[in-house]
Image 1 (cartoon, one colour):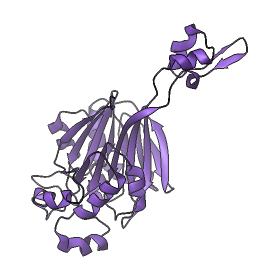
Image 2 (cartoon, helix red, strand yellow):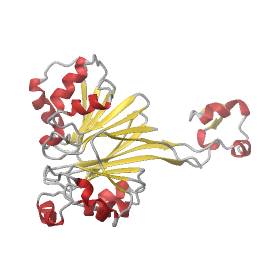
Image 3 (cartoon, helix red, strand yellow):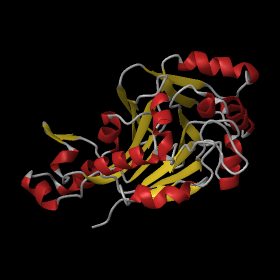
Image 4 (spheres, one colour):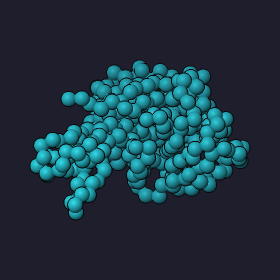
Length: 303
């Protein structure tokens, strides 16, 4: 199970009624945060979630509305008596950018581990999850992220018997361990069925539509994507500034065949995103207009 909270839905600047785009995902006592614009602590406190278990922070790119809240966030985490290491993932020069921002937050009670992204894509196993970063197309280097929780297959009694595996080792092998007895080695795949569908969440903002988004969002249970403009007259502005309209985002969701799609990163000039919903849904019916602190619990499918 993944607990998801879209802390804010704004782009460029925080507004009295809209916080900047940021995402928190909780799993098994740990938290992943993606982006941290100014004032992100307010949304976390309003949601009633905690700063202390943030173990991984992913940065999409180095524009202020996505990273300027970092010094305050780090200080808040330190004040929560955190001592465990924090991993920060982001584009090349991440360590330099973060340390520059830390001029006003130099003393922290926890270490920071940096993972800098240099390729078009990279995959990591963190906190029991698979995290994938993929490069998108903004006016500076920018990445989207997918978070996947894999699910192993069911224990297959007939398969275990067919492989002549003694019953006393079944539970050990089911946990993924390997057993060697009398020169014979037994592995988990000898007792388990095919992997079942897991949970997939994809987050992407500040980009033009590119094939990498569809590829990485494919069949996501939840796809959170930039829909900066609803006014069709701003399509040229979106192209010029390397952003997306709601309609372009909806087409990506449709092509990726996602289960549910939330739009986010609205322009400050976009006061009421909901007025565009019907037209956007005519492209892809599973679109929802994201709202600050919108939450969802993603669970494994049961057949």
